[in-house]
Length: 511
Image (cartoon, rainbow, N blue to C red; front, side):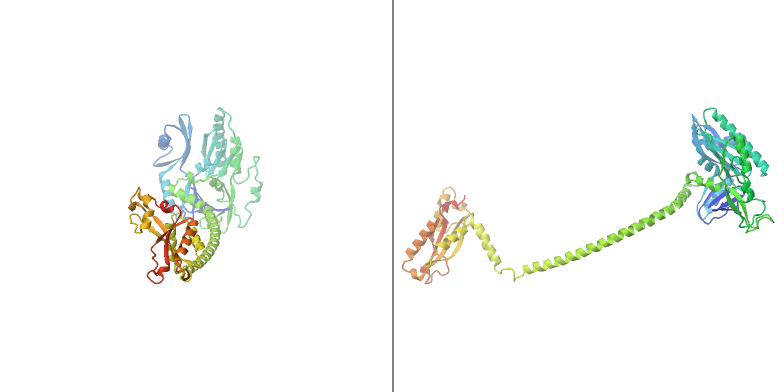
């Protein structure tokens, strides 16, 4: 909602309507207030020193000139540096009026930014452009010429059309003089001047019935040489003629609505409308939060309110994107869950198979004994060809000489060798080392049995077998049999030999 106040007058602008409001209304939502104080003073001051002291210097100057009395509030709208000094565009308003307006803003249910009209006029200007604000009997001109601020203002004697036209002509003459003075220092562009009226028309005008086209026949015929038409055409043309500038009216038509109790008798009723024109809605387009007179908190609330639709749209788009992404994630999670279930089933099947492999039915019962045997064979072989020995024994065995078994003997370090034959086999090593230093002396013992048919010729049979083994590269040495059958009737037929490869009797011994 756009509100405008100038003294006791308060206006509210809608899309195509304007309404007169009581003083200090209570709008339902956020609002933008354009403020043009009747007792305010707007001007341009050339000062020196620090711009932070501009407010104090301007107030002191105006008081010395008698332009203001009582407590006042100074607003600086723009600074421009000139050499060692600066120009300041300012407005001075009665402090009481400003405090009343500020208290009203604080009591509103929603935020309302207050914009001084001179600041909005200046915000819409480029170099060479100008703008006029017509509010009642006051007319204010602001322009930019080569970066310098051009200012002029007049006050009409009354609101009569001839007085307003006379004031517009006087304002144009002031603008022409200011522009001519600046033209001496170089070329100054002369761009069109924008004309903003706070409110033109209305008041005690002839009645216009509700629903009648606002562009009445008389207004459509009022066309000037400068191309300006509307209710303010007379004063606009007077200003254009005296200033020598092209004027563009920014006014727009509105339907004014007023309560019958507030209107003069015989003129307006609650259902009657009247055609008015105003440029305030166009002027409000320059209302940026940085130009407002409110505290910073109110400005941030205004910015947040302006960004709310965009943020809402962004949130909706983000929600839609997240929803689509969550659907993708859900589909992916379902796929992962299925894969996990499949892997769990495979793991369960593998565990069952492993449990079957480890059961007693699968593993051999004498596995531990076999492992011990192979470990002993690997340890006692010490690089010897055990398989070759077994193959030689298998080949040399006959029906009369049977091989019962092969066993290994090992002497640990420091252990005495009880068998004298094995001790003699280590004499070469003990020539340099004591017998207790001998470690890992290994040998294979073959236990055999002569058949009953060989009784009486056992010596010949054993001698033949020993010669056969020696021909195969082995040295045999007879030892006492340790077979459990020794001492029985079979003892005469049992024999045991220590078997070593030829030349290994000393090679198997290491210091």
